[in-house]
Image 1: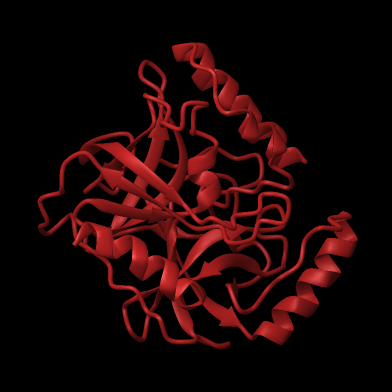
Image 2: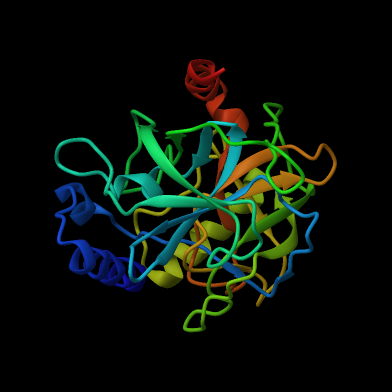
Length: 281
C-alpha cells in the first residue's frame, strides 16, 4: 500500500499543477508498484537508444514510467503507466508526454506528445495481470544514433537467460531518483522458481492477491540489494543473447529485497502486440 500512496501523491501534484481531474479508475489500483533500478550503473551513450521516459507536468515535471520505442510512432509500456493518465472523456492528461534520445530524462533529447493509447482489454489492476499497453505519437520519430527501434522476441524464454534492464528513478526505497539512465544485468528465473519465491514473499508482505502467471509473466533476479524499485514500470527487459525485448517491467515486492521482479512476458501477448503494431506500419 506504500507504493499506492506514493503514486497517489504524485498524481495529486500533477492535478494541482494543471487542475485537470483524472479518471476515477485510478482509485482502484491495488498493490501498485512502479519499479526502478537499485544497484545499477549509469548507462553509456550506446546503451538503450530505444528507451523512452514517460513524464508529466509543465512547471514541475515528474518521471512516472519507462517504455520502449517499437515503431517510429509507437511506444510500448505497462498498462498501469497509461491508465492513471486517462481522463473521463477517454483522452490522456494534457501534460503527459515522453522523452526519447537522451540518457537524462530531465535534459536534452526529444519531447514527444501522445496521439492515442491502447490498453490490453483484459488488464486487471487488482492482480497486476495483462499489464501491457501502447502510446502512439502525434509525429513519427526521426531514427538515428540516439533514437532506435527495439525488436521484440516472441519466443518462449525460460530461466537463466542473461538479460538487461534499464530505467530511471529511485536507487533505494526512500532514495532520490537519478536523472541518468541506470542499467542492471539480471537473469531470468524459471517459472517454477518464480511462483514459489513469490508465494513466500506474498505471505511475508501479506499480499494475498499477488501471484505469478508464467504464461504471461517472466521473472528476473540478481541479488539482494539489486533490482527494481519505484518509478520504472513499463521499461524493457532485453535478452543479451538476441538483443530483443522479452519483457515489460510490471511489479515487484518493494525495492530489491531479495525476491524476483515481475515483467509482462512479450511472447505471452504475441497476438495482441502484432494486432496493435500492424496499425502503425
